[in-house]
Length: 287
Image (cartoon, rainbow, N blue to C red; front, side, top):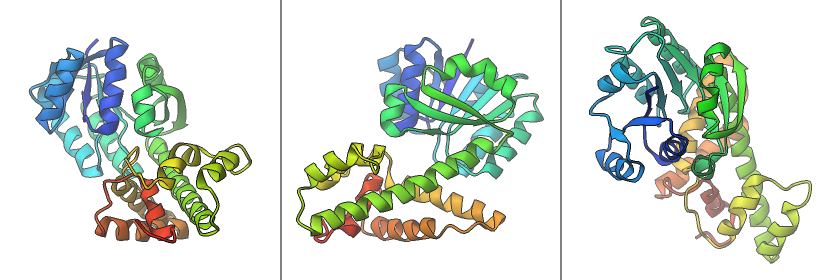
């Protein structure tokens, strides 16, 4: 079985490593060749010369890129030589409409598509502990589940094509709310003169405890914002959520607030920092 990974960003690299560790990965491709060269040496995996070659050879193709247009560009390139019954698994975060278009395009070549975005950040991709929310044909998901288990500890079938991306949008909206709540609360603690390390320790063990506080709180307190999840990418995801909500007449005031905050931080040059950099806007003495 030939398994390929297209897209070797922070998430794709971690996923590729776990696929290779489990003995599944046979080819990789990335637009930036330097990332491919380093990883192929590390993993002893073949570098595909082009997406066309992957399409002609691979049985299962994973995609993990940044934007809707990137996904559709890759899918359109695959169409030229993709084999019938090839399974394409897209773990990018894009709109549900984009997932449906990709599935329709691949169906013209008798190929299958799963929209399978993930949650868990860079740590989850590295450690193989991602949560994956999947839309598409459940029988196709069943075929690839053993492979997905090399990257994920939770794989949930959500329904028809687009359902995975719809669920990921829910996740990103919640992440925005948690980010707002945690950074605002820690800014309040800082203004009160409380010892932030102790605040984080005790609150993490109570009803308000959450993953973001436990894993990002101390870094925020120390003014460190190394990305697990880049702020600019969350901004992109929230814009997708906003567009989806407009179609459904849903109201997302918290998303709008977070988008505005992120745009200020991006303008100030902090777009490549972790989303916890929102604390820069909240704390009494901004750094």
